Image (cartoon, rainbow, N blue to C red; front, top):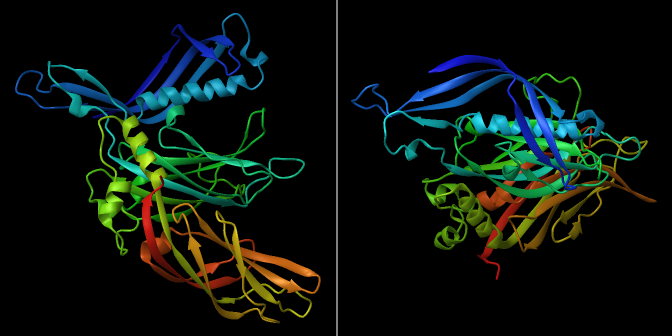
Length: 426
């Protein structure tokens, strides 16, 4: 049963807030107004009156939540920046404690109702790859972006990326792991900020991915448009985009289905022992165990990259031509190779193959940068950034990739992965 509930009141709630500086602040919460849709679940059905053993209630949809904050004996506005931080923390805590799939259980008939409690059902693997075209929040220089990611908006469940200084097209290539309790209703939220050091970080934009849009056991590579507010999707301002790789692995699903390398000629037994996820009694234990196993795994192999050709490149000289060449970089190992220069062509053909011995395929990435050769140096034309997930999964990839940072142009590539050893890092 779902019903809309409106509640207004002025309860006497005083919170003891402790800041990072060790200062304790008694904060009074007043004038609470709340409107939302609550879900009531009557189960299990029993033979005795009232015919159900317990009631579960949860907030299905929040429509409005307003309240007033006041420092006991003072004004909250006298402390710069702290009002917004406290208000956001309180909102997140209230919403997470009530919002579905979190639920409260009220026993009606004595019995064991532990099966109704919230339980983890799977793990979401997230690779924060990059962003592009971010809004610049700095007057001098460029923004210093970092990301916060979460499924549930509580501090211990949130993940934070590293800060990339002075870059509106940052590359993170960071991996995170989240516990999923209900894949049908939960979603992953990504928020991008400009790091201001000791001052409050400035919000750039946010995006979300609904978990029910992910196919279990299959990697999904997505670009998400950043908006100011998830509830108001129409945002005229261009805030940039963020790129993610997502893999949802439900518990109880066959290990091979959620194994990135299940269709490769590798020892599945070794992989299952190394990175297989088994359900544990508590969420924190699941997260701790699974994360540690992922850290222990190293995937080695040889990546062969054939730079076939490019097409529809932008003109770089007064004659309407360019002298393009490609620089290939394995980011983590910092190994660079480059093709030959093709003179006076906007549709160059190279057909050159380069081999990279990859030490950590799960966490490395390939960057291909296109330049125009010039007598006095080189001019940047654009780039392609790719993780190794797809080629490791499929073994071979032949595709055309658009150039980032260019008005036009594509790179035609053939990639092949030859696996070597998968083992635990001693």
